Image (cartoon, rainbow, N blue to C red; front, side, top):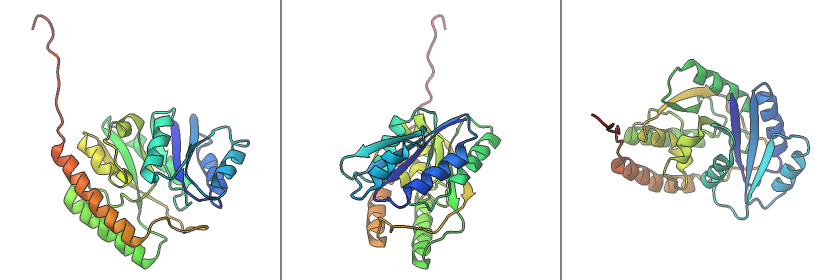
Length: 242
């Protein structure tokens, strides 16, 4: 299949080169693919490293936000610019394994359903601190209980989804953490696939636990509001002579 890989990055100068090489290795057998790295207002040498890498990887495209707009906006910018119908996303810190993208593609092919619009990575063995694992598990449990999205790990950056369906979603900051529920809201199916999760080799997390908690509460309330206000119409056109 033809696939666009969208990677939002912010101050990941030590991670981008290795990640580009891994994506290329994982997808070189595909019919066609592109890598879209979205530099979200980095203050280090991330953008310079990406521009240099373009000389060696013709599949690499680089977008730049003049100032940081957040991960969700960076993903949206990349998806809007993508050339292909299916999008894979990865976090820019290297903790998602690009070798899992073909696994998601295989899982998609095994499910014969036009309604399968998203495959979400499930980090069943996380390489994080005990507190981060606990807080993530707790947040996922609360979200599932309220939104009923049947997705054990919406925080995983590794996802495969249809470009047109993503762009049809109402945009809000941090939507990437609620994408399964939003896809289901507009009529799609979502399945979870177990994927690898690696320890961060360089740099540090851009999110603090308290920041993530406070933002998550506000966003969850917004997602609840959207679901309650959304309806799916079944439309048919009456033909002349009927």
